Image (cartoon, rainbow, N blue to C red; front, top):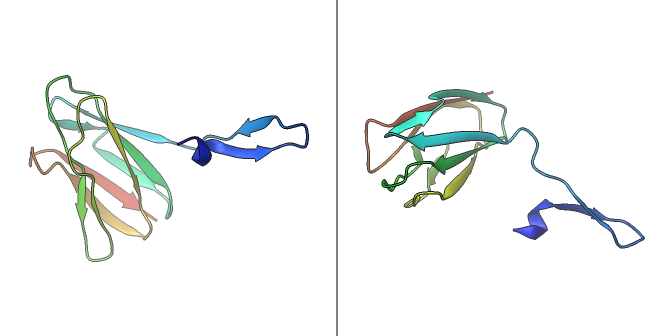
Length: 106
């Protein structure tokens, strides 16, 4: 979304793009998350990318303080998960239950 990356427009009309800082990419490939363990601060996000050519994946979090459901992530697609609270979370693929990503948020 273009509006999400434009940081400011100067008086001369030139747009300045600002990208999210510290974009942490998590790959879904070979029915695994890679890396499998990450640490974040409250409010930071991960971008989960389906790098498989022939598998649909998901990224789901179910915790007392936070829940997220990406729905199906087709090959080449991505989902962004922002973690709003402290805690230890597990991101699972609802299609491949052995896929697990540990996220530690402080």
